[in-house]
Amino acid sequence: MKIQENILIKQYNSFGINVYANLFAKFNSINELGELFELSKKSKFAYPRQTLIIGGGTNILFTKNFDGLVLKNDIKGIKIVKEEKQHIYVKVGAGESWHQFVLYCIKNGWAGVENLSLIPGNVGASPMQNIGAYGVEIKDVFHSLEAYHILDKKLVNFTFNDCEFGYRDSVFKNKHKNEFVITDVVFKLNLIPKYNISYGAIVKELDKMGVKDLSLKVVSQAVINIRNSKLPDPKVIGNAGSFFKNPEISSSQFKVLCSQYPKIVGYSLLNGNIKLAAGWLIEQCGPSIGISWKGFRKGDVGCYNKQALVLVNYDNAKGNELYDLSKEILQSVESKFNVILESEVNIV
Image (cartoon, rainbow, N blue to C red; front, side, top):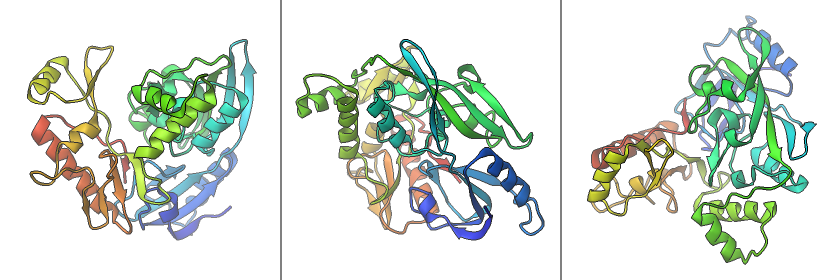
């Protein structure tokens, strides 16, 4: 275990941005993490101004070289901690691949995460982001997690309430930002499947697949098919999935927008507000009249031609070029719809 200096971290971010980290190291255990923090303080390394913890690097955009210490979380392991009549509690290392964990659950007949198939990244980021797709969010299967407090040098247990989950949000993105390193997560999964196929896209895909009997595997495969049909593979085209969150507006504002744009896509929420489809909003806008952001390309940056929500690095784009494009998109949507989009990707 050692800290490396001036390391290219292109392979550690799914946008594939050519940036360097002043200092870089990987850790496989909580003990190694603590040792690395101590090692980084020694004069040889000159204690960095900032520290960044990464997992799969799938939700981050580097706009410049990182002048500090980048630590890659490689803590692995999947372990059953408790089993009840209808539920099983599974502890998973933060460094495990999220999709591989989903496939492991399906193989073992553990239900609850099948709708979250093929979401990129590692397990540790799942509660931080409260990842979600097709009617399911992490909060629906979350039980608890352990996280290392960087300053206090101790493990802290977080319950469901402690995490304060919101839409693609948790305490680790605001109140406790940069204070903790998530080391493992315990999920409460169902031993008796309760299929969630309320999203029309899943129903259509299951029909297309000719499915007559539901199973965890076929629901997962339907989600995989849908995601593959509209999202680029980061190994082929650099991207971080959806760049923007779906915005939430009041029902009164939605009525006004409906009168102006009858085809606008929105979904009713329990609080009475409306969640808009950010992809639809972006697709209606563009860099100039008659040109949509969807499929737009300028040099090596652009919006994916099958999903306007996805910003892409076609070859050798710079992070600040992608960031500038995101700002142009934000401004165009606000100008046309008076709706403010928020980035889902962490800008560094």
